[in-house]
Length: 468
Image (cartoon, rainbow, N blue to C red; front, top):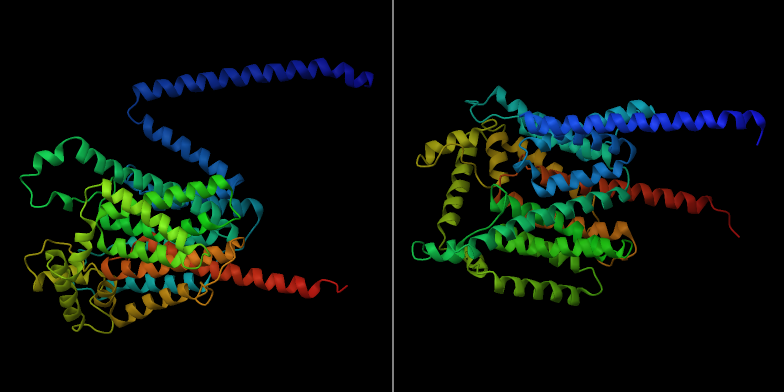
């Protein structure tokens, strides 16, 4: 050690000690101040949320995978039920952080795809129908600040197939959160004695539906089914760790139970098709399906819900099925009044009351095709089908033998299964502004785009490698 360096060492140590004491005092004062605000100020909760959001933003700037995991959790958990508007605020915040990262790193590239291009045209057309709509009571901007915002954020955050892993990990956490909430509501209903108290006052106590903190059992079931394929695929992927696979298995098992106790008929069919298709490509398909089936039988034998009776009601004898059929048939009659460009956004909600005046205001068709063809005509329907077609092209429909060590192959099986199951969402639910469905379509399109790029890079590397 040189004399000059030795002479500076005590001063340096003293300076570090002073900085540590100063930092400790500042942190202590800030902690006391936050505690005082929490006790004395009514808006302390909002300040705490802002501080947490700022911390997540800083973490996302350094680790983009954190943002992907949070995005998956937000979409699958419906955390917005506790924090209204938090989904849109989160997406807008993520877009802001992405812009800051691009400015800091001087990265002017933007993630685009043919699907995003078609989706922008669809959203623009739907919003422009205000020019000829009869009345604008039901006109809204959900397609812009929900769907389009989510699609833009997804296209900027996903850069390779590897990004699906943290996203689906967060989605699995959201599925567990949702499922536990639904199962807890069923347990509370029966364990508290409410079921026994009202058993003599209702026709069929087994027909009770449970959906936790979600606003509607069908929306909850559809959301779980949408992410179920990708989660099961990663559970069966040998490239993930043991703890990850156990986590995915837990999320899939609880989600199947939650879909069942929601008594959502279309949700159960969607989930069943998803499970069948994603396990059909596995070498141990019989064992896996037997295990899942045994878990369902055990769970549904304990929970006193009439699942089989609910499914049987699809063939008739159910008032809800008959009314939905009337909504669809009258929707097609309304469509004939404006077959090319439609009645404009909100046209169905407005005109259905003239044909079914006993309905409450704001009733929708419970069918995405009817909603779009009435509001946007054949032009809107063609644009919607184009979006679905472009997304469907992103998955491989001929690959039915997968390699468990290949992440691309397993994700293809999972996304394909969820996409098939999602068609029941289009047929039984008004999903025009349903963000999870649009997110699934975007992920399918991006998966195909990333897979083609990786295959192209692999072929170029192989051709460029020297021959021995």
